[in-house]
Length: 116
Length: 117
Image (cartoon, rainbow over all chains, first blue to last red):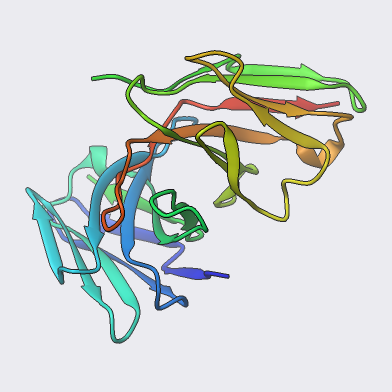
């Protein structure tokens, strides 16, 4: 089955600086890669996603890049703010037998702390 | 913005008892999921459900677990004869019809924290 590795496990960044979180996946058939932000005791909240037919996607201060050959994808947060502090999870989709109903395999999470 | 809702937010149960966790997916979504997150760990897939049947289940989802869509709005996870290691946050998620080539985002509820004593 799919395996997703995520690094680093913790990351501290000065406010205003950039943060980068990296993930690798094992299954070359995976074709959908979302990123979730989870604040303490809250639901995982989708912040950005990318499909395998594109290499980069940006939404304001957040961007995701995908390298299908190397099977890795990264989350980039620029101009970090204190409210960016949270745990971030990457995930990869693994198509189930029923097309269109993809389960998500999650990485182990990165605890991002923004230092004011 | 529509949300996935889950009840209860916290469930405390004696070991060996049965629990039912309830979810109301987003109304126009057709795919439903349960995930589990043990405290401080990653989110783990349990089961996916489409067209009134299980589409996929993980090794965690053994005979102790079952899912049901009893009516047009609710989606439930039942855990029979709970064990201490079942203590975790259980998240329900739903997604729209994705079609053959595209993937649709999964939206998560706030979760039910299950504590087995």
